[in-house]
Amino acid sequence: MLDARDMTDFEGHNPIPLGNRDCVPRPGRVPRPVIIIALVAVGAAALIAGEMLVGNVIVWIALGLALAALLLSFPEVCLGLFLTAGTYKSELAGVLNVETDPTVLLGGLLLAGVAVRVLRRGVRPLTPPRQVILPFALLVLVMAFSVLSDTAGEYGRQKFLRFALLTGVATVAAYATIQSTPALKRFLATAIVLGVMMTALGTVAGEGLSAFGATHIATGRIIGLALLGVLFMLLAVRRQPLFRLALLGLAGLLAFGFLSSGSRGSMVALLATLAVTALASFTLKRGRRWVAAGLILMAAVGAVSSMLVPSATETMNRRVVEVIASPSAIGSARGREQRAQDALALFYEHPWTGVGVGGFDMARGYGDAARGDYAHNILLEIACELGVLGLAAFLGLVVPALRSTVRALRQVRTKEEFATAAVVFATTIYFLVNAMFSGDLNDNRLLFAALGLCAALPRMARARPATPDAKRPAKGDGQ
Image (cartoon, rainbow, N blue to C red; front, side, top):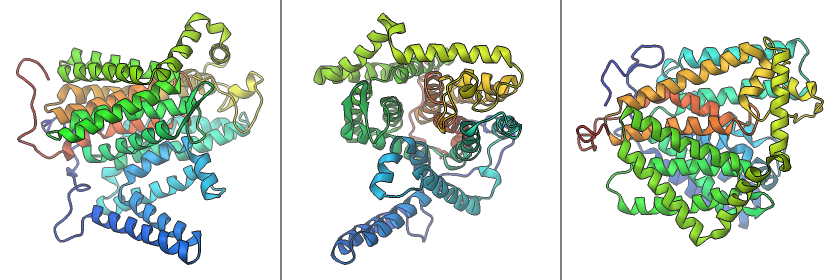
């Protein structure tokens, strides 16, 4: 465990440790898992009764109440669904036959779950530190200025509102809901379940695997997160061979789905993540054997998946070879290169204020549709639209977050501590690199949630109970 001097948040103070109250039932109370199972059972009973009585109305009401109770009890699960809603919301809206955006519905449930925790624990423990709040607030203010000065079109106004509200909720909620390792496990388990469903139910057509109406890029991005989650589970679990075996099976399935997606940006991001995490581990002399084992495991899983289902590797290989052999002939690569040049030119022309939020779309003649165009690189996007001030605010959010994860990696003492710090660091790198290839600010909402997780790392360390039997690093190996 970290000593008292290291157990400080970004502001340097030591709030009262929270403990793992979210996973240990209080004496005399019914454990929440029992309540959740009972609610699901009630929903299943209503499903049967609804078919016999009044059709689907009772069914959806019962299941909706059971699901709402589950998400309110475990807001970190709701956070995972909220962050990934863009990949399945069109399919879900069609099934439910509703016009309301599922992202908004999940955002409301997430806020309600956070409000419940505020009532239980107070505001201060759940408020992100200044190093998160101030840079994010500055980004919002710069966007607001461009909107108020009428330099933003319809896409810009929508972009501002979604960033201030939805992406803001994601950043704050990640800090407020994931302050212990069990909560982090539940969050990643949500991504794993979604990744498995995408792999099992998706279809390979055109550029690669896509599922639930999401593009192959979004599909690959989520499955990549699920792979990182499985690696974390393999590191964090102890003395459970059957569970480890099940996780290895999931890793093979997810590797197949990831390769089938043909998402080149996600592949580059995952490889960069593994390389940077390994570099940090060996430089800091922490968890070197575990990282080496993880790299070997990933290579082995990828090789086995490729041998069992060669079509998956063929999809990724074909798309990678295409862009290497003739990048100018690939429409997406050529388009990204042109947009990068346009974004740099706009930044040189308007270095201080930028062209306004969403202004890239209009300044280069791409039009002003409700879903406008963007630079496909988050740094260039912010630089050309928000200028030096916006870029400084974004870097002021990213750099301290990465420093905090490196500090946590340097201070780990047990295998579980290393697994927690490493997966937060890896997730942040993964989504940061992903943001250099695809998506605008709001499409990369998972990156801002990862930055909130970085700020929560010190609280995860304080919430972890002492475990005398925990595996400690070998002397002289810096594990």
